[in-house]
Image (cartoon, rainbow, N blue to C red; front, top):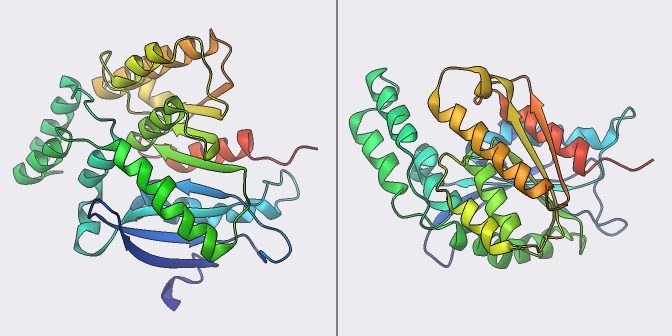
Length: 286
């Protein structure tokens, strides 16, 4: 990590790695204050969308020293994209975070087109964004996190053998739901912020049906944002409606699921959602 960043991301290392599928990733590893694996080993919390999220979430490692509500020690592993690809993170995440075969909701296409008209994206950028959604591989990315990246983190940072977590927001939250429903055994808690279940035909509902009466062992914490629900953007209205439907179906089966509505927009909700996950799933028990 460059010395320029140490004041903001203290205790953070950075490295780049290539997956077995040939994709390059940037990885930020933030260790707890005073971390010494020789005395106490901490579990890992993966945070997705590292290029965007690391600056808002990694500094919250200090919550482990908060005397008012201390969070259990964890090593944060923020995963994003490296090199020239880093500037395209917002479309590459579609490939990695969206379940295979996930339909593209018309409301999402409309939102992308609105961005073109508003000058937020060029036509070329919009087409590339939607193209990534037509060939999605959350399964391959989950395998990279658990079978390829985790052994390296375990070896280099002396992690605990249990207690690991995963946090994702928006499409990262969709990935969190997908991971929870697959029954991945690495994670004991998953935070899914504003999960991008944008259509009623989402693969998430198919996973729910396939799950039947079984319940994954991991804790699941889902957050939504007030302004997604009350605003006038159809894509966010659908997201909250569908995520609420997922929650209702899970709680009716007695699954270990918690939830919260935050007073944020979709853009401003990431940090608040991460804090909600920490406080709900990773607080020290008194």
